[in-house]
Image 1 (cartoon, rainbow, N blue to C red):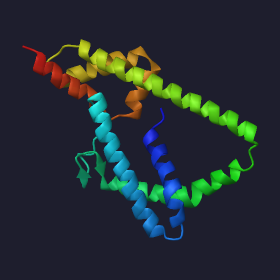
Image 2 (tube, one colour; image 1 turned 180 degrees about the vertical axis):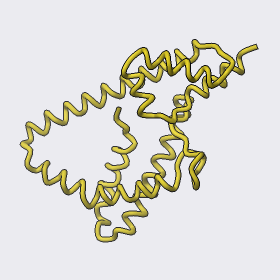
Image 3 (tube, helix red, strand yellow; image 1 turned 120 degrees about the vertical axis):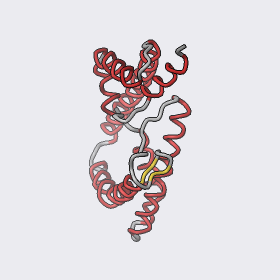
Length: 183
């Protein structure tokens, strides 16, 4: 499963931050601000769209509404520097060696894989919600365990979602809704 938030942040850094290569501290701080902002608003938007919190840093020190935390922000700053100083120059040096036709074929294949992954992931998310809604129990832990059990048996792709987002709270959220509806 691809995580577009990282690719989107990387593209923004490459577009706007390359001119700050000569000042590593400015680059580091700007990468922190950009990536933390993107992560915060992505979390907020995804929660509003899917009614699910995909990650939660509430257990970490120096977090903001559980959506972002200082530890990850500092890592984003370091990764931003790695991207600008090491990874992008390396990729560009290899890119220049690839004939345009071959590069186009590779780009189309990657785009098809990405779009396919997005479609399959959205379908699985919908199935998770439907399956969880169909299980009516009174105990959150039991519901969570049962939904995971059912979904893990369904397909490799369902297991992949749980592995990609181990802190997903969709099951707990659905369990709370079920308990509120129960007489």
